[in-house]
Length: 247
Image (cartoon, rainbow, N blue to C red; front, side, top):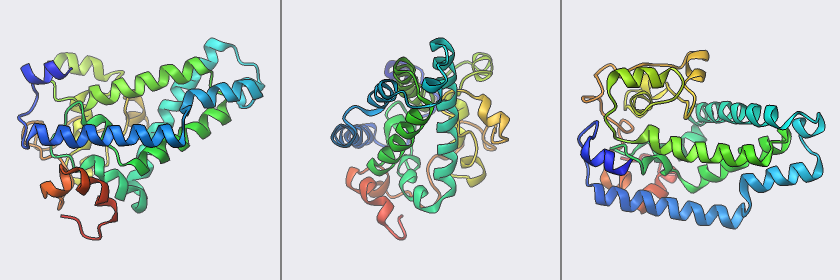
C-alpha cells in the first residue's frame, strides 16, 4: 500500500512526509504501549473470558458458531459506525477525535493517528460490546484484523480507477469515499462515518459520494487549525485536546 501511494498517489502531499510519518508512527507506538498496560489482552481476552464464563447473548443462547461469528463482525462494524458519529457530536469527545482530523494529508499512517484517550475510549466500548454479545474469539480476531487493514486502506493516498471505486463502494468504504469525511467543510466532515462496510452511511443517511470541490481541490483538516506545531508535531497533537483556541 505504501508503494502504491508512492508510485500512483491520488493527491499531491502538502506537508513534509517525514515529519508527518514520524509524528503519526510515534503516536501509534504510544497508543500500543498504553493499550498493553491497561488492556493487556484487549478484545481477544474479553472474548475468551466471555466464552469461559458463558457471558453474552451468543453464549447464553448457544448460537451456532458460524452465525455468531458473522453477526458479531457485522454488529461490531455497526458499533464503530455509531461510535464514530458519537465522537463528532459530543464536544468533549470531538476535542480528542480532532487529533485524527487535523492531519493535513491522508495516507496509510493517518488510519492509526488517534489520541491515546480516544484509543482507550474505543477499546472500552469494544470490550463492553464483546462481553455483552458474547462475541466468539475468532470473530474478535477477524474483526480486529479487518479494522486495522481497512483503516490503512481507506485513509491511503492511492489512485483507484473510478469504475473500480464505484464497484468497491457498493460494499466497502474506499479511500475516495472516506476522504470526503476529512474535508474542512463541516457538512462533509459530518458524513461517511463508516470504516469498513459502506452500507451504514447509506442506511442512516450520512453518505456523501464526493466533495463539492472535487477530490483534488478539496482541503483536508479542521477549519481554523493549520499550524504545523499543532497538526504534524507529536507534542502539539498530544496537547491539542486541552487547548482552548488551537490554531
